Length: 182
Ligand code: HEM
Image (tube, rainbow, N blue to C red; front, side, top):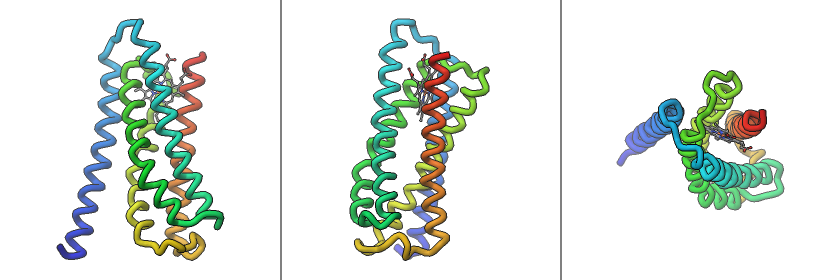
């Protein structure tokens, strides 16, 4: 397979992933408007929501911690690669659990903050797909490559994705928490 064909295949896969996460998000929001789960289900589903949050956000924080260590010269790219490879699964499992349980929690979609939260969930999901590009780019770097030696545009793109990820996750967490206590 030529380089161009490989690039096209990767692009097609990434577009399919963007469409896939958007469809999963839209399905979760749509289901939340049509499902009317019985009251007794609320507590177990809320528990599933929180467990999924711990798994998903926990794995995101671990990867971003390794990314921060590499960016500040305290860690090696090899360690970040390892974290990225092993923690990618819990991130998507956690996010899947949040979408699934969220669909059963009957969100108040007429509440502006709920809409902000759901937009944040979509942003962090799409950004998660965008970040998978880094997995490939990181695997090409020599194991002692320094973050400071990357081209400026790559460093800015890397930092932007990491910051967007943190802002979107914490926006969803804070609004979820405030919404459930007011
Ligand atoms: C990254 C994704 C998400 C995060 C980080 C997140 C986070 C949270 C948090 C921290 C809570 C507060 C739980 C508590 O204090 O008891 C919560 C509650 C809630 N979430 Fe999510 N959530 C996410 C996705 C979703 C989705 C996709 C939906 C709906 C489609 C949803 C609907 C709800 C509802 C309705 C509650 C209130 C439950 C209640 O207390 O009755 N969440 N969420």
